[in-house]
Image (cartoon, rainbow, N blue to C red):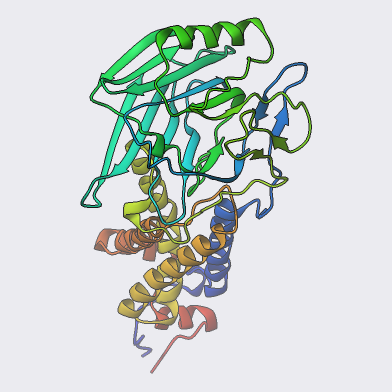
Length: 398
């Protein structure tokens, strides 16, 4: 009598280990392609002069930076300052930073961000105990399709006022923007530390260490509306004024000569991009952050499943679980290191945590007995001994 020592399915019922290995490798390559393609560390800086008028256009990824740093106006740090910018957004549905100051190792003192058709104004400063104080103003219905908007933000002893096209749109009593907030390197069209590129047109920009009156704001808007080039304000309280009327070249000159010129680089780069940024430093709106976490977890679930199914063929269960999760984490680490060299990608630890969690979730989903039975029936899941029997067609008899 022939006695089978172990009841196993016919060898043809199991997927071959080689087939499973190829599927794992294909999934791994697909993830690399999705996260790293196109691998272009030096993309073109999509900033072009507007034809027939003053101004520059920012494409999908473009940036203009100051050639030097704006000096911190500490000696005249009263509660009086103003900024004016004439611009047109490329879309009214996205969230991107279009103006900001940054100094390496310091905080972001001032930032202007488009939020859909609205405007977010961020101001950060340090108090006497070196604590960072952050405050923001949210202004609605600023950007309109195809239309230029002149934004004037004036700050004085009573607070801050925001004007749109010469008309008062919002007041913020107690909210102050100091001249020292206009310090560090100026960036237009992108954020300094993470990929956050804005698309649209900018025609004029000016900074002041004084509070502009309502009459001055209306006058500046009237001058900008009547002529291609606004009359330069040569007041001693004007920190810098850029009219973008060069029409060609890579330099935007400061008309006042007290501030640095602006430069249009040949290649797009994020100037102070973080390498493996910690989670608490990755700056994104909440809904974008949550969406990114969900996509990163779900995206690595299939990899975790396939790695576990393959490793289960060559190792025991516990080792297969551990190695699958470790390989998923190392894959994510490699991706984040390579993404630091790609300006359009961010390099952060959050993605490593979420990708590794996704790998572990994929492994976990294959542990319930009904799932294992179904996969064994389909010939996908097998132990090392089953796989060896399948590969060699061994049947023990006595």
